Image (cartoon, rainbow, N blue to C red; front, side):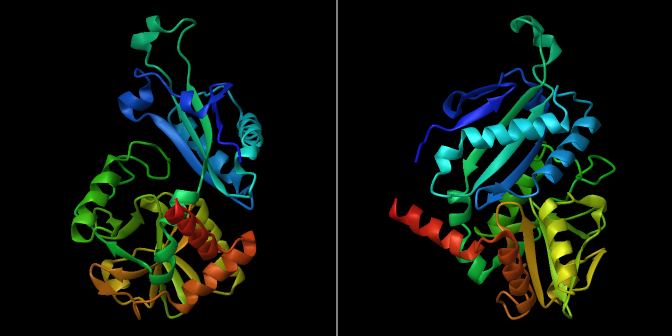
Length: 312
């Protein structure tokens, strides 16, 4: 398997080890960058177009003209994938990450011959280490902890615009991990209602149905939407609503959703068991349906990667 991955950088393809951007880039100065993370199943990108469409909502919001139409971005993405196919010749799944910034700030324009322009990068990265870390968690579940750090409300910074200005995520993670080194932070809004994880959405299961935060103060995740659709096909009642910590304490089950790991059971909450303290039947039913939909057994894939990393 080739290890020479290439990265798309503003219209050119360069070796991964040579990819970079200027220290004067607005991405570094302000976190002024929109991004998306997509993943593959059996080597095929899952809902790539939805990710690209959300990317362009963010670009319009930040008034960044990256020089590519959505169709052009999709074409560049597919070319990036094909240029890296040989690196994943054993069928290994990978993530596809887009980062688009305003580019170097105008103040520093004299440094750049030909002027400044937006910075666009597209890269592929194996999911080996991401998923290996989740192998045991799929079986035993994770510990969701509410930190002191809250979500930034939509009236200040719209969380539906997926951007890199996420220092509050990092603070929340650090706070949660002081409670439990393996805890997953679960944020709340100004009124104490649950919002999302730090890079994930959150669901509870009550009386056989799903409850999840209303879309006001969260990132409307592509995987979240996929789970809502999948649950509908399975005949599970789904409701978006205000959720309180009390609703998790009294839930039968709970789980996080995100692009890399898709569905992750949460079996503890603030030090207490959720339901039986094990992944519940509804969560397991959704995980099985997801595996069938994408034709990949997620737990088996994570375990295989964990064994590989352990041997390394």
